[in-house]
Structure formats: structure tokens, C-alpha cells
Length: 212
Image (cartoon, rainbow, N blue to C red; front, top):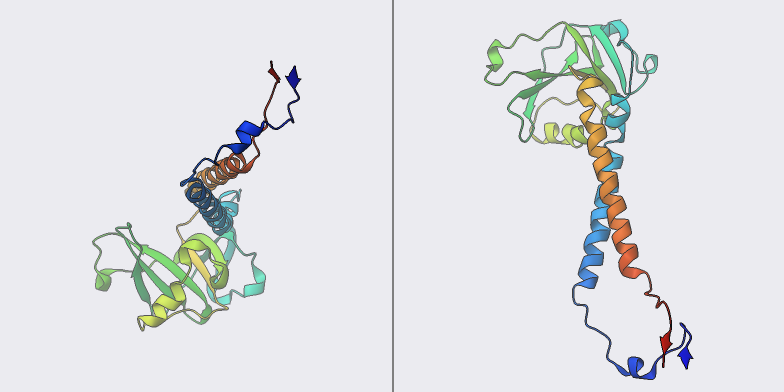
């Protein structure tokens, strides 16, 4: 006598359901990790697309004449300018250098972010007049500049308007290639979590037959 694979054994049905105290916790952990990985990857999308920019930086000449509609967002540009007297300073976690943010003299709709070397004194820092870097709207400057304007306003420092643009001096596509590796790693995390959730939730199917 043989039982079909779909036949139900009464003795097995009478057994109590096995306890799985960590199954729900594992599912929640996998789900949260997948959501965080995808969200962070989405937040790095602009940085990743900038890393794929090729060629030479676009020449903008005198940045005092810059108009928001004359350039493409998230582009690599070069320009010259004299900076205004008002400037803001801030640091980032785990970064030994200090950053300075200042508007272009005569064009408050364009601000320049510069990196001050570690140990440099503010009163001795002489800003350059030529800048090469990434040009983005302040409102779409990416994950690393998220909340920058609000932080400057809370500290009482000058801050760019919400419709202003930001030129991040010294940032090139080559210097941002590491972002592509981080994005790939995040996608692998998300895929692994999706596979783990599927494995835990997929029904177990019996194979073969039981003979007697």
C-alpha cells in the first residue's frame, strides 16, 4: 500500500505545531534590513549617477553670471569666482577636515562648498578663485547634504535659499566611484533578505511516497 504525496497522515496531524519563537523576529529583521538597504541605495542614486559622468568638466567661465537654467543638474563643471564675505563652517562625522560654504559674490543663487585642510586656521584660510566640482541644486544635493540648510539655520549661520545651487569643489566622478560599490553591496543585502523571507514563508512540500 502506498500513500500519494498529497495524502495527510492522521498521526502527523495530531502532533502539536512546532514552536518557532525566533521565526517572526527573523522575518521582521530581514524585512527591515531589506527596506533600509533599498532606501539607502535610492538615497545614493544621484551620487552613483554622478560617478558615471565621463569626459572633461563643462566650462562655465565666470560663476557670477551663472543662471540655474543654464546648466544640467548633477554635472561636473569648472568656473571662476570671487566668494562673498559671508561664509558658514561645519564638519562631518569621521572626517578630520572642515568644510566652508560661501556664496558667489554678486550671485547669491550659487554657493560653493570647499574643504579646509585639517589643522588650518579659519583666519588664515584663503579661498581659491577657480573651482572644479559637482554642480547640483541645494534641494537635490543628495544624502550627504541632507539637512545641511536646516542645521546652518539652527546654528545661526548664513545658509543658501532652497532654490539655490551648490558647487561642491573638488568632487569629481572618479572620487565618487566608491558609491557604486556601496550601492551594489546594498542591493546584494536586499536580495539576500528577500531570498531569506521567501525561504521562511514558502510552504514545505513533501516528496516521494510512503510505502507499507
